[in-house]
Image (cartoon, rainbow, N blue to C red):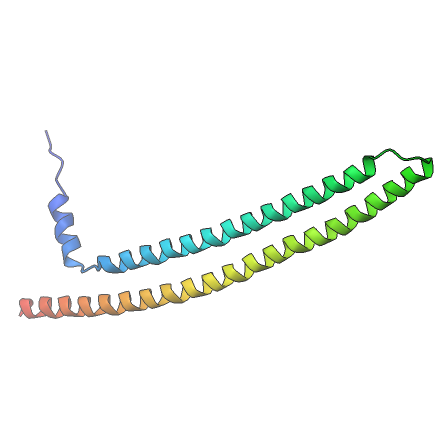
Length: 149
């Protein structure tokens, strides 16, 4: 019966022949983790601010509903109360939607800044890793050429 060949030693020898710098991978992982942390911070701040805006909008609306729901002496007072409520609701909507837009704008600006900084960091890491790998391969090639003579 034929035995399956164990390629463990072959793979170890092959991987040993190709120099690889694990610190480059560690650096890339650290850069990625730092970016994730910063992006999470931006998202959490935006969620917190959005929650505050929503809460304020709800409180403002409920206070206006309280005014609207009060008993009136004249039927025309109900029309006026409805008109006042609709007007204040439109004002609140515009005000709060503008506040949401400011949050979105801030998140967008911070995200672009983070992505640009991360791209620069990753480019620097990649350049350093390629330079080191090139030097390592050159050294290995010189050793192999010297051993072949």
